Structures are given as structure tokens and as C-alpha cells.
Amino acid sequence: MNIKKLLPILLVLSIVLFSLSGCGAKQSSSGQNSSNTPQKTEITFVSGGAGGPYHVIASALASLWNEKIQNINVTNSSTAASVVNLRMINENKAQIAFTMSDVAYLASKGQEMFKEPLGNVMGFASLHDNYVQLITKKDSNINSVYDLKGKRVGVGAPGSGTEFNARGILKAAGMTYNDLAKADYLSYAETCEQLANGNIDAGFITGGLPVAAITELATTKDIKIVPIAPEIIEKLKQEYPIYFEAEIPAGVYKGVDSPVKTVALKNYIVINKDVPEDLAYNLIKTMFDNWESVKQAHSALKDVSIEKATEHMVLPLHPGVEKFYREKGIIK
Image (cartoon, rainbow, N blue to C red):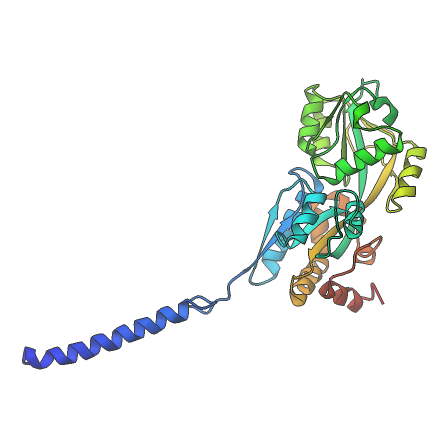
């Protein structure tokens, strides 16, 4: 064929091919990729310190949700726990969180560390009991909260529920941080490490039983758990009725061979109110539909069941969560 006659044909083909490629680029720039696969919804689950029950349980739930629910990606993020977590939920920096019920109560009222009520935080589930565990070495002369005067004490990470508990217990005993030789703001792992190294004399850790960091400490050091006196518990309950008296069973930790009286409170999972109703419903349904496997993640969950999922819940439930509980007859 004459080359001059072929050129116009090639030009037309080039224009057609260019137009087609332009249409393809426009389509792939939409909310879906070129294979029409929906983009994943990113969910941040803020939990607690590494080694603590919050972080362990959140890891199990994140894996479950990622496996069972399509088009989501749940990331477990380690934090200083309750106070920080609630603020992150309220500021839309996270979608799911663990918190202690007393801190959630304060957040709903806008009291203590919260200057105003946190309106973006809603209830998801009430789970295991949290036990205040005041630990020290077995050979120490600390046998009560009152013996902490003049001692170096780990009081929990800054902004954590443990720190709030420690401060409240000292207040109920007629003390403040000024009565201590030092109030050290430490995570679970740091508290146990500093106690082992002799840098603190005792430390507060609030968590479900057992706390992995304490279990590990008890394998290398002889420890004891200091009881919380009944009169201290009563004063706490008068100010915050969300607390209740409890007992740490014998044998939970190596060397702790007798039950220990202490104070406990519920743990919550909370959710951001802007999470779509159908997604919140799928999250709670998937969790309890697979609860027997979730319970294997941590022994603290052994007595938790769907029937107790709204026990001592002081926050309004997310609409998607409420729908699920009504379907199951948990609430009327």
C-alpha cells in the first residue's frame, strides 16, 4: 500500500487509542480501582500497653474482624489506655477502644480529667472485670495502702485508668502523691521492670486476671499483692458507685497462695458514634457469634458472656449495637 494513503489511517487509529486510554484513566480515578474492588474501611482499635489484657484481646478481635468481615482493615494500636483512648474516640482519631468503666463514667459527665462530656463516645460491650493490683516484693514491709507513705510507687501510665485508680485509692486512704517519696508514671511492663530492678517499692496495675507482665515478674521475683482495706473501698464506692469489692483468687500468680481483697470495676469496649450503623452491627455480631474462640485469647474473658454484655454499662449504646442486643433479647 502507498505510504501516503496509509498515514491518514494510522492517524485515525492513534486518536481512537488515545481516547480509549483517557476513558480508562478517568474510571480508575474514582472511588474504586480498575477491577471494581471496593476500597477497605480503615478501623483503628486503640487498646492499651503491650503485655496487658487490653492489647492481647484487641489483637484477637482485630484478627477476627479482618478475617470475617469483608472490606475492612482493623489495626490494634497500643496506647496509655482509658483516658487517651476515650479522647481519641471523641476526636475521631479512632473508631473502637478499650476503657475502664470509671473513666468512661467521668468522660460521660465531663468530670476530673475531662473538661466537658465526650459526646462522640458510645457503648459497645461491657466485658471482663478489672482488678486493682497493688504489687510489691514479698520481703517488703508494705502490707497495706497506708504503708505506701514515703515509698517510691508506680502509679500507672500518664492519662491511664490505672493512674486514676491509684490516685483515687490514695485519696480514700487520706493520702496524695505528695505523701509518697516518688510517684512514678509507668506502664504495666515498666512497673514490673522497675520493681524487679529495685527502682520502685510498689506499683499499681489495674487489669483483668492475670496481667501478663505480673505473671512474668512472678517467675523471676517473689511478689505479693497488697490488699485494699474495706474502708478504702467503701469511700471509693461512695464517690464512684461503679466500683465494687472483689477478690483476686489464690494461685493466679506464682507465690500468691491466698486470696487478696481488692476493688474492681468493669471494662468496656466503646465505639465512635459516626461508625455506620450496619458496620457497628456487623462488628458486635461477629464478635459474639465467635465468642468461644475470642475467649481463648485471654483468661480474663472466661466468665464473660453475651448475657452480661450490657452489665453496668453507663454509656448510651450505638444504634447498630443496640439493634443487635434487641435481636438477641439482651435489652427490651
